[in-house]
Length: 221
Image 1 (spheres, rainbow, N blue to C red):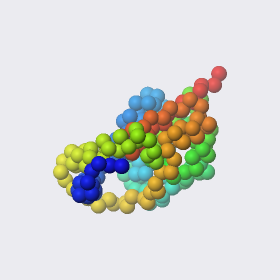
Image 2: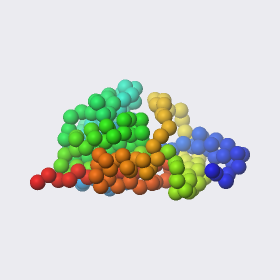
Image 3: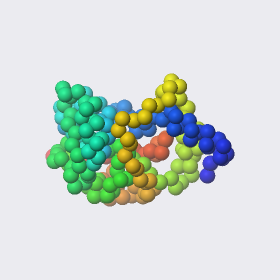
Image 4: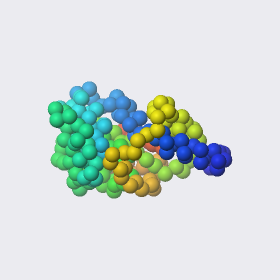
């Protein structure tokens, strides 16, 4: 429950709408710091317009971006230089993941739209020995810790939007954002289910309605 009044919440909502910013992109650099310096092959599941895939392509020999929306895939291709070692394909995890193995698999704000354990099992099977899986996920708030992070994020969100936009209102997107569905799993539920598939996976709650899940496949002898 928030202590902010309805009037303040309406004001914050109006600012968020006028000066939106990408909560997922905030974690891209964080993701890169968790990965090997020069991975050979990388897969970005739910690649959207390709921002993270293009960052991965600066370090990887080959990158594949997978997204279920053909319009978004077309936009990603149009935004990507032809010289970049990245390709975008239309498909939905877990059934349409291009064959691995991959040294890196990333999945940002997408896993809550997919069959959870089946998708993690698919990612595990497509990871090369010693490979790294990094998930930035969305969860259903359930704990005092979640509510505390929300209490910080709600007023901070429009402030960051104003700073990033330098006071300029955002133009209408060229490609409409796909419809999203709310997350149904809590962080404890996510961690419990993840560790059934990925023993030793590490989860941490983050600001702006996100959590991170990191797992490294053991190197085979």
